[in-house]
Image (cartoon, rainbow, N blue to C red; front, side):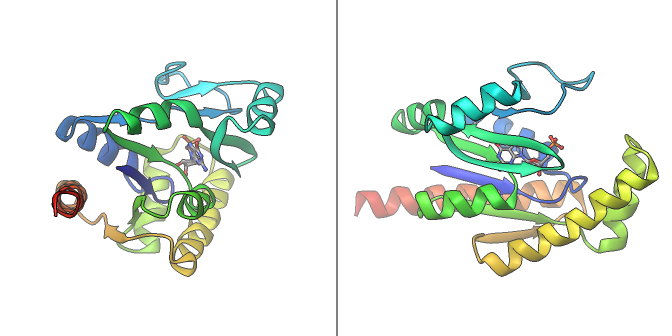
Length: 192
Ligand code: 5GP
């Protein structure tokens, strides 16, 4: 099953993704990006960090399943590892933005997609500030982009389930349950 998880930055989707990887025999799709690697990230694990020329080459030769321009950088999902893991019957997790999720919805209508929401916009702003990775003007910009991402997610109708992350443990439980239920449903349908 192809599983997509999205949500604005600061909403907790990376933590939820790690919990999914601990719970299921799943494969995380390592995206390519032109943004810089931060001190806590590892090349090839969190992302494959590439130059813009490499990204364009991959995109134009059809080697990306989807791609998007987010916060001034390019991001994309390499096609081959996803197709190989799916052929091996694995659950494949894509942590991508709404623009990418809309493309996946078109090319893979049977993908299962969850969008993580903050309890309120104020709570999201507070979380972005708490992380304090960036100066206030960057936080404000991320907040504006998060608000429009949530609006686009709703309007696109691309997502199957919306989970509000009010309490992280409960949000993890809700996402794991939704994924487990969906896999069970598909297995039953396949054996009917
Ligand atoms: P960050 O730079 O904070 O890791 O990610 C910024 C945004 O890009 C997040 O919303 C993240 O989900 C999204 N993103 C990461 N990888 C991909 C990808 O391969 N494709 C798309 N469309 N979005 C991605």
